[in-house]
Length: 149
Image (cartoon, rainbow, N blue to C red; front, side, top):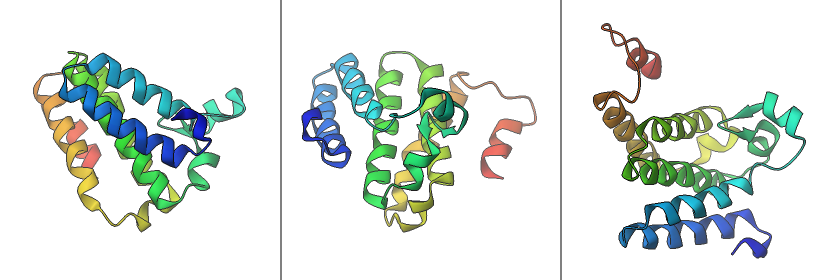
């Protein structure tokens, strides 16, 4: 699937295969597969991309991405978060949800994504992470307020 040379097709295949792994209780296999697919988007000059990235994805990659590829990228982030949660790695899971949200907020093609239900698993994952105390928040709910601001 990685040899296709097309991140869009490869990410779609990774999502299908990863979900099959997940259905069979193989969360670590799913996570490994998703991480390999995400790595396809993280190419380039490490120093420059590290400074100018959103959710680990270089801004120049996000700027050149169409809405279909963006949707697949965000789904990979969400599925990675879910796999991490299933592996009892709630804090890491919360980071992937945050990355997915940040990408959807900053990527130029985000306004072209028609399926707005893509955001529901992000908010649901955040809620679970907050409830499980994998995300630190103060008594005033400052973290929650910053998300909706």
